[in-house]
Length: 294
Length: 126
Image (cartoon, rainbow over all chains, first blue to last red):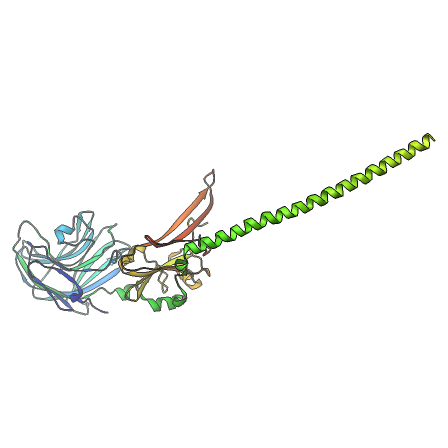
């Protein structure tokens, strides 16, 4: 499966703490006092939470300070650091945190309507490469984080999950993303995320090569032309008008002529008929009276 | 009895990079939401009639009834900055007792400031 090319992503990096190769996104000395992230705009609703999906990536934390923090992977509908985004956008997040007890922990969160829903976190080590599988299960609205110690993802170190319904479909992917605070602003963290694989082809092919799609559907693409848009309205109106105009003229003419003919004939035939009857009737009476009074 | 009007057209959005997003996946019958369309990148958008095969897949996958026809296809070409108009307008007529007299769907296609087609279920233009 093809992994993401981080050189096609966009930086917001005011202090020059980010760098990329095609396969790796590196953060060096990233603090909680800066708004810093690397993102890709995948298009509105690209991450469709009504569908299951799995993302894979590897990561390694190379340098940490107490209370340092980074979102290794996150999906949003807004551009900003964690603390800007969580009040304006729904989101899914995988985070690394160096807690007050000096343990290094990973976990996941869902943000919905300004609320934060957190999984439990589990401990990992620094200077170790881990292999992550993120699983979104649409039927239960669950975000699950699994961390493995081998690239084949057979040795599971730990897993955790969180569920929340009604999360919006999401647009931007960020790898990594800082989280600004008013405290611990100077604590820094360094490391990298690499081999990010969204596995979009294997889970569900949404977008097709145009020619393949039309062939599959049995639609001859060349025969599909926008003729309906090319026909000018004015010509059509003129044609219809003149056609109707012709009919208007012809129909009354024909009708008039016909009725005229009928009128003449009708009158004539009736008159003749009545005339005949009158004559015959008169004749008969006259004859009868003639017979009675010779 | 169905409580919705079966679709007789489905949409395909074609992008400038030679890819396309269909409303229904022809392999699986699964539906893509219109919100997935990356509108600024669309160069052609069209309403297309269902084939028997696609209708059968959609019915099997989603239990949604669609009607295959030999209706013509209608497409609109879009240039950079054009705003697509594509929607279904559904009309339901009720009698005085509240019963449905008839339903119909008109498929609308065009772009803002341009000609807008109203395509009826029989494939004819209004």
